[in-house]
Amino acid sequence: MTQNIIIAGSGFAGLWSAISAARAIALAGRSGDIQVTMVSPSPNVGIRPRLYEAVIENMNPDIAALLDAVGVRHVAGLVETIDAAAKLITIAHRDGGWTTLPYDRFVLATGSRAFAPDLPGLHEYAFDVDTVERALQLDAHLKGLRDAPATAARNTAVIVGGGFTGLESATEMPDRLRAILGGDADIRVVIVDTAKEIGAELGAEAAPVIREALAECGVESRSAVRATAIDANGVTLSSGERIEASTVIWAAGMRANALAAQIPGEHDPLGRVVGDAFLHAPQADGIFVTGDTVKAATDDQGNFAVMSCQHALSLGRVAGHNAAAELVGLPLHPYSQPKYVTCLDLGPWGALYTEGWDRQVRLTRAEGKKVKQEINTVWIYPPAPDRDAVFAAANPDYVIVP
Ligand SMILES: Cc1cc2nc3c(=O)[nH]c(=O)nc-3n(C[C@H](O)[C@H](O)[C@H](O)COP(=O)(O)OP(=O)(O)OC[C@H]3O[C@@H](n4cnc5c(N)ncnc54)[C@H](O)[C@@H]3O)c2cc1C
Image 1 (tube, rainbow, N blue to C red):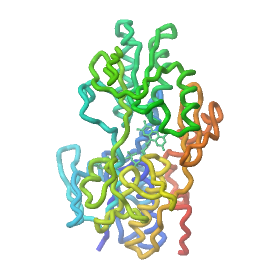
Image 2: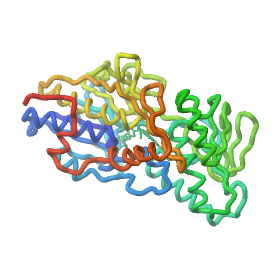
Image 3: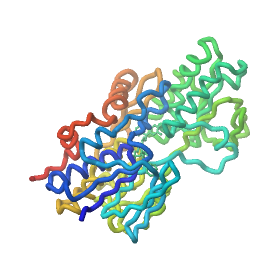
């Protein structure tokens, strides 16, 4: 009887889980009796790390041909429920229909979403760059400002959250608004964060570099404050300050996709399932957790994967391989990713490339930007649908003797 590996999600982790699973099955000569199925709204990878950019193009590449090339079936829909005891999932389809599928192994790769606390006006008035659809909504709004009366609010954007997404959105915004509203418009961009100083959470070496870039891009900072309310005309801060702004962008952190809560076991404060070294959900037989839905140790020094492509791409390969390996009798591969780097785009200033968990500054400005462009336009994109080349890249640090 055919066995089933189901992978929920077609992001970075889901794609590489699917390829890695297919590869392990092929290496074991079992392609005929194990089906790998990916479930997601459509066979596309949303390139979330680029959604702060001014031009939203090629941000949702199609992977249908790639999945075909490696023998993975795609089912369009959203996984709604995971019954870990019965090893069943239910899928909701866009036409209102439902499917129930049994699994032998299930990989949760449904990623994360913007953290949305219960803040007055957040849902009604704030924009974000969390998904391609949301980034397109922001883009349409910004372009629509061209026809709005030339007030200070029209010319002002406030970015709430001084992490990676907030910083990238903020430093891009002055030029982006100028391109829409004209070079002589009096543009104002403000970034707001609860940290004592903007960038402080990104490390002692990186923080002053970030502040230099913000100043050079013309971005104002408000630190040690939080947004307390958002409305159609601006944002109110915990300091009592009111900033009139037609554009408020919410970038205050991420949380694991809600499905993670359906998986029994320990969860971290971000909602991620605490996985074991092989990315099992330890309390749920047959379930693996990967990408932004897992808290996994990257080394034996006490470091853990962060919600990032860098980690999702590797976590995906390991989870997919292990899901298949358990069915075909290959050794499981422990997840390990000791090297940690970051590359933060800082608009016209350039980009900041760091190495290590303490984020030692390695490259800045144009040199950093070159790395960022390579990451954003080449490294994170799905590969061409060439089965052999894709399999070769699917789990490069794992040597299987066929
Ligand atoms: C603006 C922005 C900038 C970023 N910048 C960087 C950066 O510079 N560097 C970096 O490393 N990381 C960055 N990140 C983080 C990075 O994008 C995520 O960590 C990464 O996308 C996680 O990959 P993933 O595969 O786990 O999840 P995702 O990429 O979120 O993919 C999740 C997939 O699951 C699908 N899905 C969701 N719910 C369901 C469901 N119920 N059923 C089935 N499918 C479902 C989605 O459609 C999607 O296909 C950024 C994120 C954002 C939003």
